[in-house]
Image 1 (cartoon, rainbow, N blue to C red):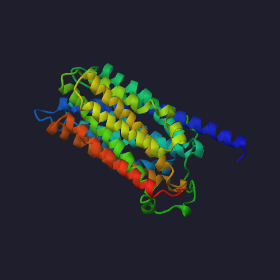
Image 2 (image 1 turned 90 degrees about the horizontal axis):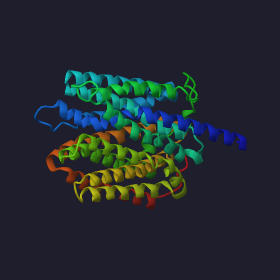
Image 3 (image 1 turned 30 degrees about the vertical axis):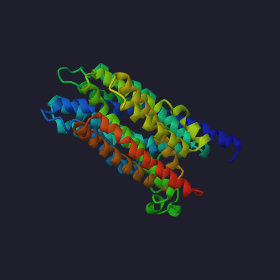
Image 4 (image 1 turned 135 degrees about the horizontal axis):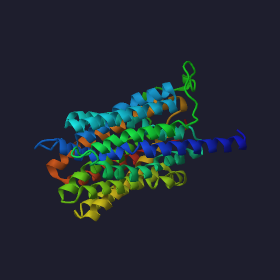
Length: 405
């Protein structure tokens, strides 16, 4: 490839990453809306027994898990642009169902609505892989970071939408927040229409499948195992603690706005480092960045266990977000290096199915653990999980070998 062709490929990769980042910023705002309001709306809809208050958030994460394999298959069938557009329709449908459920005061319909929003979110999760797949090797990690950097806007937009719309249809609380997801989906679809990724055509394979290995062979390689383990650990811990945080803050006498802004700071911390995380991975290696993320998660637990003041909640949530950023982006970069182009759909789908299935379980257990043992136990659990992730990285280092394609 000539220097001119390389430069053109890099420019196109940056354009694709920026469009996906903008789409992530808009459509991805449905996630913070679902997470910050899901537990509180569930609490609002339930009777005297509030133990299932976080079930709607679990519905959201279950939806992401259930949607992972179908989303990958649809994107492979339709092509990335049309597949992503399909995802915006699913997200809008989920927002509509959740809004109607709040008007009908139906807890389980509301939970189902968040599940559908989660299925739409499974398509959004594929944005990071699409950016990497359409980038030169030296730009892959930074392309992933560019896309996830769109979450900075999400961190501001989602919670602000919640604050200004949750009483829009009073006395039906929170309905306005979920109705806003329809508008976000429409704007996101308009941005995605600008993608220049070639559409998939029937009968024309992107890449010959003759060199594709069996999935069982790929997912048992040490690098993929360590990457998946650290991705699950980082993301599940983030979901586990974040899901319980709004309930803990309100339970300690802090306001709903305090809880919402706490989630806003948390989501900002999740995505703000993305402007340079890719460069750090390129310079120091994905494994070191993942390890740094695990240390930050431990710092979150230490701060959270030190007290119940507003600053301690917010600081812990910020450290939780930073730890997720380094741990998850680093692990994603490791996954992106573990498969060949012809294997991407099945590997990405399997990865996200396991990942978000684990995250769904973590969010469900968050409510149960919080109700049974309180906020402190949510944070004590961080320690053994991060230790296991360090063990996985250690095993990878001891068994390291070249991992080309």
